[in-house]
Image (tube, rainbow, N blue to C red; front, side, top):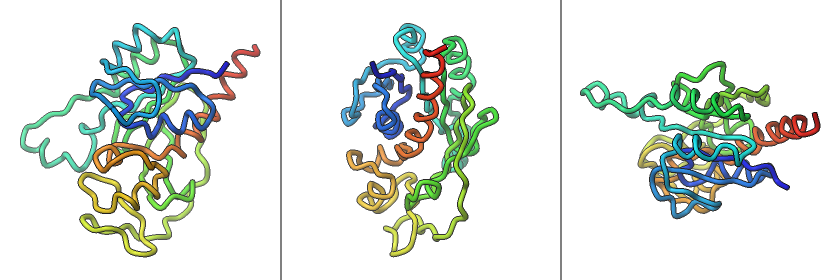
Length: 215
């Protein structure tokens, strides 16, 4: 029987696809409807769903909202707008389950002892740095130098450029190819992470689950 992973704050399913590619049965939860999510989906409060259903799962991935930490929202925060900080709440909820877990967020987020993944590590045409915290011993591959320029915001990439999949970027077909996500539109892509990242992590978590089952 496949191990099951709970994909919290799942958005369009970029992270979930990577875990599925690693061999997990994936179940997603998001407070907003996600009609393009490619696996079993529940529209619910993520942390409430975790509290009530964690016993049905072997591991948990969480991508809590990042607006409190991203540079793109600094101008709004400077005008008094505040975004909720979900990282500490999510960590506490995950710790309470005793399950292997991963928390993903942007580089400026307050994750504890995180590893960073980059698209260059996986041969993708986007850098898209993301941090991953885990209560398991997971590692990152070597980080190659950034050899390609990033396209300027507001126009599609030129030959040899990497795309920045941020906000109202231009070049959705290029972004789909660069991130290896072919089922999402612009809005969902801007929130997604490449499945290659979570496939790499998922294979490591799968080994840990196997060791626990064999013990």
